Length: 275
Ligand code: KIV
Image (cartoon, rainbow, N blue to C red; front, top):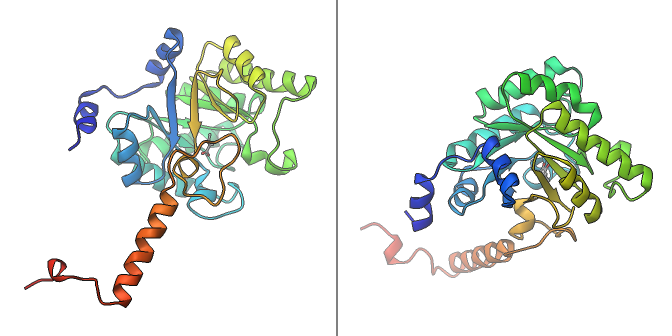
């Protein structure tokens, strides 16, 4: 076990409340998506504070064009793997399209599944004023809720594509009203996605709960990235994301070498063979 993992295992679990304390102290924190056991374990041991089992798994894991086809069963399945791998990080299960929009009762039922079957410590859902009732009811069931406003990928058809939100005066007012509504409904934190950096900074100053930015500049209380963007596992990296490693290239080189060694009878060697 590495030094990082040994010290991580002694650390306390990150909680919704401890993240709020971090905001009050002005200490930024990190969130990263995770969808399976091996990566979740690495991220947890590397000190990521929050692991989000995002419905982005529709794109990154399933190869779909958008997140709309992702089902609650699928998020529960991936959340279970991630939760099993973590000792320190807060695990947030993302509520997929259709699992909370019909009624607040539906929303509570879906959130309970993510906690009970998936092992999530909190849930996330998209929408501002439209999601108020769902946030209130889930919070009333003692499940911490993370909001998500600005560019909300589940609204792809209503938005006419993935468009930066809040560029016009009316748009700014809408995004701000959404963020305030999410806080008033009882969310413990809110993702700010795809908006001008100065708007995200203003919202961060107006809210008591932490803001977690993605494509929203450095003025947020925390940042989130999709793991495939950070590690170079997707075909392209969005302009707001930073690729910290190119695991795709490393994997490709390793697999090409393996194929070559098999074809030329270099693998398996004596050291990989039983006597
Ligand atoms: O689904 C997801 O991964 C997300 C993050 C990009 C915030 O919602």
